[in-house]
Amino acid sequence: MREILHMTWETYAQYNGMAMHMGVFLAALLFLHVFHKTKTERANAYFLSGYAVMFFMIFFCPLTAKIIMEYCIGANVYWRMFWILPISVVVAYAFAASLRETVRWKRAVLMTGMALAIMVTGSAVYTSENFTKAQNIYKLPQEAIDVCQIINEDARENDIEEKRAIVVNELLSYIRQYDGSIQMPYGRNALKGEKLTNKNSKKIFKLMCNLQVDWQNLAKSAEKGAYNYLVYYRDETVEQELQDLGYKRIGDGGGYFVYRREG
Image 1 (cartoon, rainbow, N blue to C red):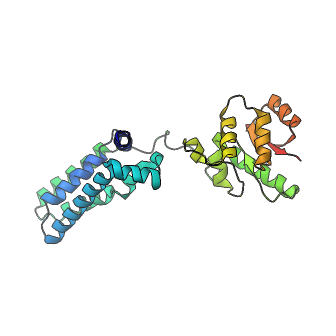
Image 2 (cartoon, rainbow, N blue to C red):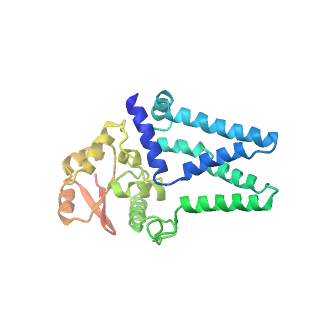
Image 3 (tube, rainbow, N blue to C red):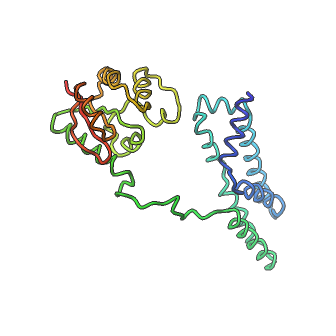
């Protein structure tokens, strides 16, 4: 339980980071309690604050956190729990409530204060770190699209109905996004450290993670799983070794060679 509690606090710290949006959210709840004028506003304030309290109790309670992590969404994405916390809704509602202040100077002070709080606690998102020019309309690396097209074209030419490919880890999620018909032994769950239930897939993943791949063992695992395509970095030495194991290079996808297992 101590480990679970530590994970919840660590998840909260990572989600909140150095920002103050959680502080603005709590301040908005307090504002709704202090400045409510009608029974409806008071009821809304109690409902929203009660919901927030219940959320944090469930989030930080080791028992409920363990159940959610192990049986619902997984420990690696426990931060997604914050998606059901209406931070933006509450802040917007508190801002709108301030507009109903009848005294003009008080309304101006409240509006200015809230606007400044949002500006000061926020950060610009339109930076070069967050945005880069897309290589194509799919907003995916062009190499991944080239690899998919090479596999699809080869499959059509050779009447291959089921396309099963082993690819390098950095192309894994992109190929799945572009073409779901290309089957792979594992998804990004393996990259996140989640356990693989299929023993052969687990073995392939371990082999592909090594700097020096044991191609003979990989070829055996590929044959066992009926994986007829392989995508690896451009390397003539590796190509020769793969040819000896029954692989034929069928295309060049940027920095990657695409092979088909024959026989």
